[in-house]
Image 1 (cartoon, rainbow, N blue to C red):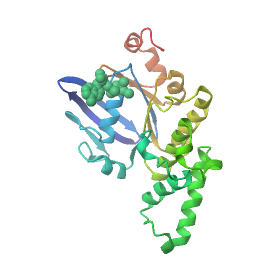
Image 2: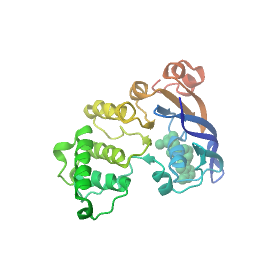
Image 3: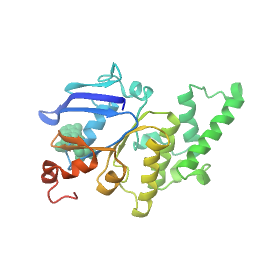
Image 4: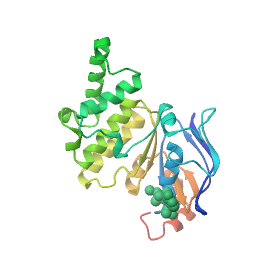
Length: 250
Ligand SMILES: Nc1ncnc2c1ncn2[C@@H]1O[C@H](COP(=O)(O)OP(=O)(O)O)[C@@H](O)[C@H]1O
Ligand SMILES: [Mg+2]
């Protein structure tokens, strides 16, 4: 399988504390990679380095041949790396449809002047409806995004990400704060990111049954180190992982 991106010896020190320590990992195109580890293991910090919010103390991130270690969040997003569940990605005062449409237009490089290209506009609106339909929000398309429940906002964010045409999607605890009955639907939508939309997905999640059901491989972080990255079966059988999770949910 082809590499989506690779990280080499990635390390982060904050105020003398080692947050991430020499992470080396090849993420494959179109795989769903689960990232697990106890609280404070460095999972969110790893996402911060991948999305460009923070710069590593040491090490590199390559997207194909390109070294993207030190490029901006914005530039990275334009290369197709997207992180969800930052509330800033949803405009509360706009409708769901407008939210998705703006992302679709931005990714198509279209200006806001629709009169110039009416046909294209209709196409984008239809595509936006289609994406809302895929996340189960079509009937609410004309509501303001601010009126959505917490869970539905997350679904909207996924529709926005799909509209943006990102290739690599980082999901940091997508199930957090979701009510139990909404989890299975979100799991299926996350699964579709790889199976239907052919994205590369990195997902940090505490619910082991969710990770085990979704991930092609699982990376385990512990105290900022990568313990193992392998198939779910091999990870579960690994004695070091078992001891790191002693008393936890493995
Ligand atoms: N801005 C920061 N300043 C100092 N320490 C931080 C900062 N951000 C995270 N940390 C520390 O880094 C470690 C890893 O945090 P984090 O990446 O949030 O872990 P996880 O997402 O796996 O729970 C924790 O010990 C946390 O306290
Ligand atoms: Mg975290």
